[in-house]
Image 1 (spheres, rainbow, N blue to C red):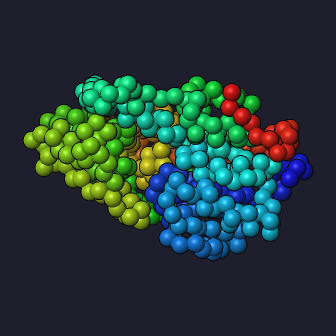
Image 2: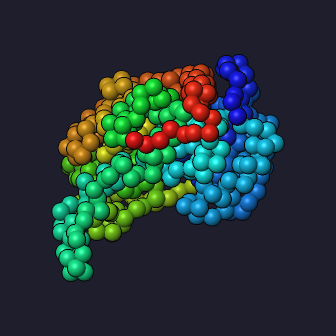
Image 3: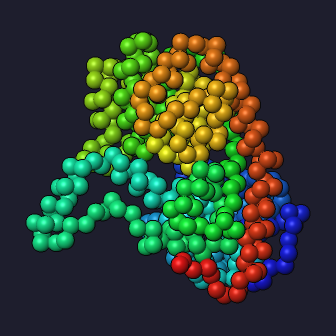
Length: 422
């Protein structure tokens, strides 16, 4: 299909393929899917969301949003969704297809329908997760792995070594007519590691639609709770936060640290990270509440009982949880490593700390806990900033421009040939 030139005035028919969808609320990709679908729908564009679900079903979300769900494991999703996509495309041809790099969810559709313009969204590729995990593995597990290979009369290899040339996510990204990163940090990082072409790479921040419950929270909480929301995994800076806790509690013994999110194992020893947090906290464990997973609908209540939010990630592509903390008018401490530094204006809408720096995390928290007035000031500025900068009105023109570039780039190449990796 060779699409005619379009402008942002035309109502587009967009297909978004993602294993995570409306039934996966709370995750970064799922939150983006929900927000971008509403943003496009409100502007009059038509969207088909192809995602996973408990059974095969199609239903109308609103006048412009159609949800198509298929059951099954993630590795089978790209092929499972193909017949449903084909039927929808034959009935009403899509102007553009969008999918994430993570999991290559649009792979089968892109290979089967090479003439449809393809936009790949960079949310946070697997190699970035692997790189963070690798840092925390240490040398002892590596030696044990090598010795095990030698005992099996095999040549020792390093399973933590990354080879971009064989990375399916990179290969999938290079097929795209337009690659859209959620932050400048993500664009720079992936461009350097993957060798992405600048003429097909752009940055469109994530649209943010905070709930009324979050936006109406009292900006002056009376609690002494420091809240972490996110997966409890090493790349989220949880171990550094645990090391910072005793330092903070020596000066503010009445503070409670509350950790909310699914608990993952440590990549080095396989033990749940909650065990490591308690061990690192030592005698201060009584001041730590490890909640585990909660329904996404419970997040406003978690924010309501907190006074400060902390997100000390090793590296973060963007940061919906950080945005929600800011929209709740909480003082936030975020990582200077990655896209969170583009959300927080240090000293005005929050505080930024270097990654892997427990002392810096502790110093920032001690400063805020000792100055409630500063927390109020930062929280008010944070709420106003995040609501304004990432509102649909600000992001929609950039989103549509990315789709237009994809269509224009697709027109320049042979209609049945995708870009290839070098």
